[in-house]
Amino acid sequence: MAPTFTHEFKNQSYTGKTSFGTGVYIDGQFRDGSNGTTIDVVNPTNGSLITKIAEATAADVNTAVKAAQKALDTTWGLNTSGAERGELIGKLVRLMERDQDELSAIEALDNGKTFGWAKGVDIAFSIQTIKYFAGWADKITGQTIETDEKKLVYTRHEPLGVVGQIIPWNFPLLMFAWKIAPALATGNAIVIKYTIRLMRERKKRDAGRAA
Image (cartoon, rainbow, N blue to C red):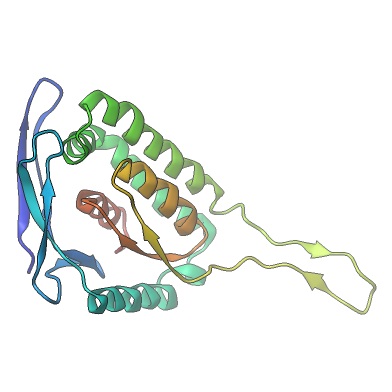
């Protein structure tokens, strides 16, 4: 079982405590990396150590891909209607709106930004992006193309499957939203190489689906 990171914020912008796992997040739970090594998460404003997170190996990635494929084969992808995907993604939006101050404080700590910038840009635009694609989930349709009476020609949109996504360091939550929102709305499953986006995955779990 991976250790839990807890941090208490005490400043003019936000006061509160946050807590979440520091392991590799696979199949709905945080777990230690297969080789037991960790990565330092450093406060860019002063160089101090925030916490250590598990380092994933190729074996961990393979495990994550298998878990994502299992989700596609059972509870996601073509097994979930666009309307249901939209509702689940919308639930994620509502959770982010509810906890936007906490998310802003985490983003500011991790990324060295001010609380106001994190809340007004990173968090606000992330919520806006995910909300937009939640609305598209049940509006992506194919086309029937007119030909002669002996043929039926049509297009059909299907999920690509398991997709890999890399989140950069400079706008991690916003880049996260840009990548996951359209992929999830169209029924894909995701394996993410992350920065410290552990809290965000907890929100996804709370929204009703394992990452």
